[in-house]
Image 1: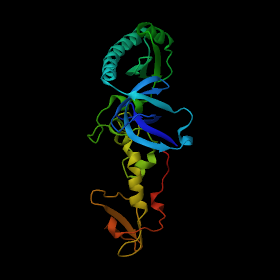
Image 2: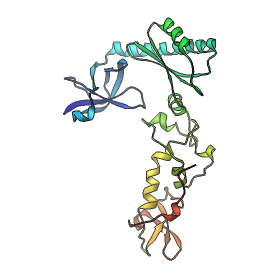
Image 3: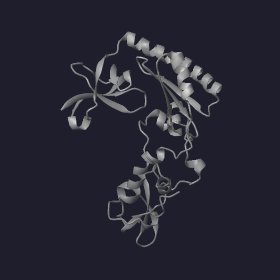
Image 4: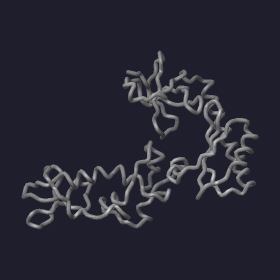
Length: 274
C-alpha cells in the first residue's frame, strides 16, 4: 500500500495523487509538488489515505514540501506575469496574422514552462510565434489548442439557468453528453435551448440524467393497480411521477406510493442520433 494525498492545482480541476513521505498534511494545506511539468503549487483536497500500488501506476510523484509565505508570494507574482505574457502574445499573434484566439496563459510554479491556451477552427502554423515568445521570456514555451468546452471552463460565465457555469463552479471533468439525454428529460430539441455558452450540449443534461432514469424506470406498482411509469415529464419539485395503469388511465402518484417492478419502456423509444 502507498500513502497518498489528492492535490488540485485549480479551483475546479482534476485531482492528482502524490505520495507525501513523512509530511503531516491535511485538507486545505498548500503544497509544492513535483510534476511532469516541473514544480507546481496546489492545494490538498483529499486527505491522506492508503491505496494499492497497482492503482497508482509507475509515474506517481511526491509532495516536496508545504508551501510557505515565500512560495505564496511567488504564485502571486506569477499571476501578475501571466497578464503581461497574455498581452505580449496577443501582440505577436496580430503581427503574424495568425487565425487563432488566445484564451489563457499559465505559468508553472518555477517558471520552467509557460503554456498559452488558444482556440482555432483548424490547424495553425505557430512555429515562428513560439520562437518569438521564447526570445522574450527565455523559458520553455508551449502553445496548446483547446476545445470550446475547455474555453468556457477557463473563461467562466452565466448559464441560461442564471447560475455560474457548472464546468466553472464544480465539474472537474467533462463527461459525454448525448441528445438522447435531452429526449429522456422531455426537453425541447431546439439546439438553442439545450446548448450551453460553449455551443455544445449542456453538461447538466448528463449529471441530471441518472435522476430521470431512476424516477421513470424503477417504479411500476401503485396502491390501485399495476402500471408503467411513462416517458412523460417527472415533476421533481413535488416528487410526483406519472403512471400509465393497466386500465389505460394515466394518474399521478408520489414516489412513496409506488414500488419497483419489471418495466419495459416501449414509449421511451427513439434513437440516440440527433
